Structures are given as C-alpha cells and as structure tokens.
Length: 105
Length: 105
Image (cartoon, rainbow over all chains, first blue to last red; front, side, top):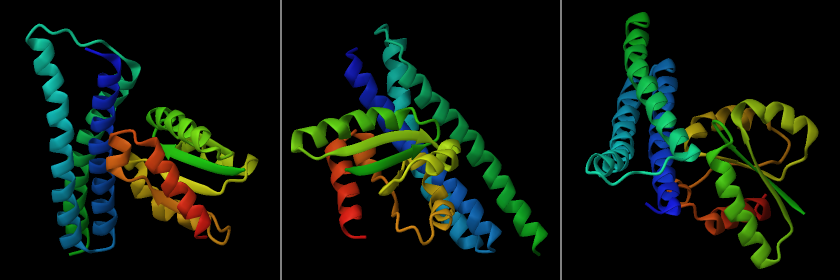
C-alpha cells in the first residue's frame, strides 16, 4: 500500500471519529443544560460519523486479513487511538446523559 | 504576516495539514506563520504568541465555546475546520477559510 494512501485513510478516520467525539461531548453539554432531546439528537449524529470512521478502518483490516500487508505509520496509530478513545467517550457519555436525567428529575 | 494557529487533541494530525497549508501559502506568495498545537498547549502558547485566527480540528470542535470565552474581546476568530477539508487534507481550502476569517474580523 502506498504511504500517501494510508495517510488519506488515517485522515478520513480522524475526521469522522473526531467529529463523532465532538458531537458526543456536545450531547453531554446539552444534557448538562437539561436539553435531553438535543442530547439524543447529537448522539445519533455522532453515531453516524463513528460508523463511517469505523467502516474506513474495517476496510484496512480486511485488506490485511486477505494477505495484503498494510504498512504501519505513526499517523495511522494516532487515527486508531482516536477511534478507540471516541468509542470509550461515547459509551460513557450515553451513561452520563442518563445520570443527568435521573439527577434532575 | 498572518498567524494561523491550529488546535487538535495531540497536535499531530493537524501538523500534516499545516504542511499542506504552508505549501499553498508559499505558492500564492502569502506570508503566513501556520502552526499546530495540542489543546492542552493553548494557554501557554497564547501567552507567548499573538495569533490572528484559531482553527479547531474535528476532534476538539466541542471546545469552541470554551476558547471563544477565553479569547473574548481579543478579536481572534475561533472556527472549526470543515471536516471534509480536514479528512481530505485540503490545505488550500483550510488556508482560504482562515484568511477569510481574518479579513472579515
């Protein structure tokens, strides 16, 4: 695989999961302000971007699994790091939104 | 000289975008100081440097209100980088957006 191509894939991952991460945080801010409908909306939107970022990543994994070795790069590792941290943030934000709901009942 | 500061979570992915933006500025004969830092370095960098515009990567877009509050009254626009331009590393588009923000302030 050409290096530049992997850079592009990394950037697409970062761009998508990064947007997903921001939307998750915005959902949490919305819940903090008591706007749970907006929080749900943001989380739904966040999920769309996360799925897209994940799709790009899965394509690479499948490529490697089929025997086409993917070159390693620091940028790609960074993109995977963003993917993982976003996954964690989203899971926790979902729980925290529920906590805000209960707290403010 | 225009100073453009890009912020992302580690200052890593954005630094690649910075290279593309610098190349675009050179090609256009625009004198610009473009650099990328991580979100945690914003405070210390602002103490040392005067900037004309602050651009946020998609993964830290949610910090926009926080930075706007911090820069209140300093006439420094804060804007999120278009995620399509970010994902495709369109340095030229991001540079243009930054220059437009500076012109409009």
